[in-house]
Image (tube, rainbow, N blue to C red; front, side, top):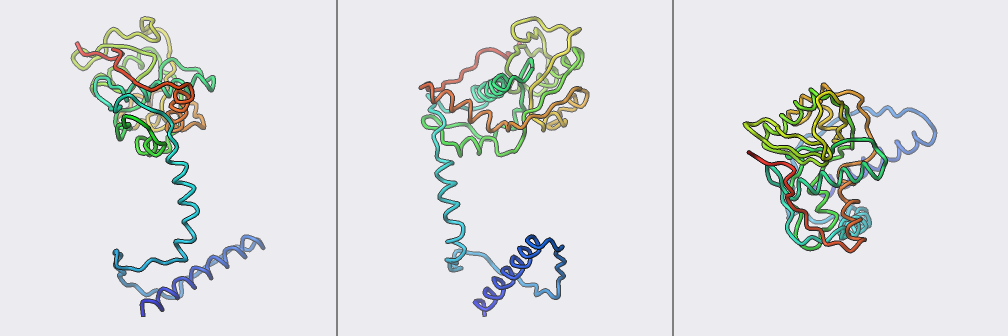
Length: 255
């Protein structure tokens, strides 16, 4: 009985696929209507025998994907973990974003992403590409926004209130959950200037409590994923024979 149901299901799928293919080729609009349905629960467990036709279909893709994901993009001297107010992974990610921006000639003053977006540490030793995907399992794109000096101060206060986030191109101190002694690329912060922040589309949309981003202007989105920015940055280091060893360098401190 189960075998008959399986055959029926496969035939139905083939008929639908064939109908859709004909519709695409000859330009007619598919109008499929449900004639009946037979609702039932089909438990999935290890006792279900493997379907060779399905395995044969996806196996070539799996082999190719596995070979791509196992690419060693970098070698690390340490396990690279995130921390607050500052951590090696924080700095690595923000610096990778900044490097991508500079490589693509994107104008910006500082690079920033949210702490919660860093999902796992990177391992000591070989770093395969799939670890980069596990670290950033999102499709977020690099985006730039412009802040007035007043709103940028509120932006730094937002970071300070959360205890610190990944940032590159700026330094500051956290005092009573406020940002003090802010420097942008080594220069004292000037509230009368406007500044461009390179970040993710997620944060530019006000994600992770970042409502201050909704006050930003001149938004520009680029077809560069944050994940790719990190992977390419790591590849550059690897090609140059550099064993990466990101450190805390004092860009965010607590008084």
